Image (tube, rainbow, N blue to C red; front, top):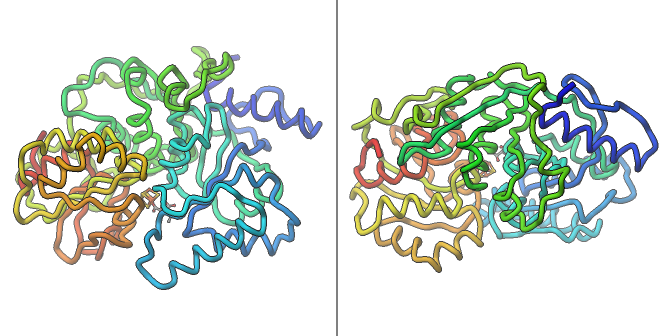
Length: 424
Ligand SMILES: CC(C)[C@H](C(=O)O)[C@@H](O)C(=O)O
Ligand code: SF4
C-alpha cells in the first residue's frame, strides 16, 4: 500500500525512534495514526522564550535533551520598541547560558528564514517551533509545525513529541507560470479555493512541473502560508535545488520522499500554471482572494515588502525590477525589510538596495517588525497598505481600521509606483 510524503517521512522517523528506545509503535505510519516522533530540531523565538523557560523549570527537567538541537532566535522584538522587550532577551540569554544552548541569533533575521538559511533544517527532518509559520521548512522536505510553549518545554526535556499523522491534500501544478505571476499568487489562490480552514490538520503535498521548476525561496513562500488554510504542514520533495540550497548531497532516502502513485489522498487539486493571474487577499480575510485586475485603481497609503513570506533576495530583486530607474508615487511610503542580514548584505552588494532606495524606499533592519504591527511603519485609521506578508487580520499592522491587501512583491512594487493597486 502506497504512502504519502508525510507518511513516509514519519515512518522513517519512528523507525529511528524505535532503534534508539526499543519501543515499537507502528511499522508503516498512515494518516490518523498517533505516534511518537524523535525531534531533529526546535526553534523558539523571543516572544515565547519567557513562557517556555518558565514551563521548563516548572516541569523539573534537570537538563535539555540536546542543547545543540535547540535554536533561539530574537526577531519579533528586535530591535526593542518597548522597554519590556528587553526582558525577553534577558530571560532568553540566561536560559541559553544555564542549559548550554549555543545556537542563539540575536539580530540575524527572521526565525523561519534563518532555520533553513543557516542550515538548521534538512530534508526528512522533524522540526517544531513556537510559531504558527513553522510550516515553512516543508520547502526543503522537512515535517515542521507550530506548537505551544508547554509542548515546547516538554520537547526540551524529552526530545520527543506525539503527533497524529495528518491526511494529505495533494496539489499538482503543471506548466509554465505567466510572466509577473509568482508562487505568492499560487498560494493565495489555493487558500482562496480551500478557505481559511479548508486544510485544517491536513498536510499539503505539492508536485508537478511548475513546482519542480520553482526555486526553494519560492517554495518557501508557499509552505510558509500553508498554515493560513489551517494546514499542519506543507511538503515539497527534496531535489537538486534543495540539495544546492541546503549545501548537501541528497541520499536515496531523501529523494524517495515523494508521494507514491497509489498513496491515499483525502483530496487532489490540480492547476494549470498558465491559468494563474496576479491576485491579492483583500481586507480582512486571508481567503478573500481577488484578481489584481479587479482591484485596479484602489488608492493606497503604504507598501510593505518583507517578512518570512516574501523578504528573500528574489523578492527584493523582483521589486527592484519594477522600480528600476523610477520613483514611487509621492504620497506612498514604501517599506522594505529583508528577511535576514545575509539577504540584506547580498542585496546591498548587488545594487538592489540602491535601486530600491533611489526609487524612494525606506529599507529597514531584518526582522518581523511591521509584519506583526510592532514597529517600523504601523498604520492608522483609514489607511490602506499593500503588503507581502501572510496575514491581513484586523489590527495586524496598526489599528483595526487599517485595510491590508496581501500580494506578491511584484504587485506590491506596482502599487508603490502608481499609488494605487495596478495589475503588473
Ligand atoms: C508571535 C507569533 C506567536 C506569531 C505566530 O505564531 O505566527 C507571529 O509570528 C505571527 O506571524 O503572527
Ligand atoms: S515575519 Fe511576520 S509572519 Fe513571519 S514570523 Fe515574523 S511576525 Fe510571524
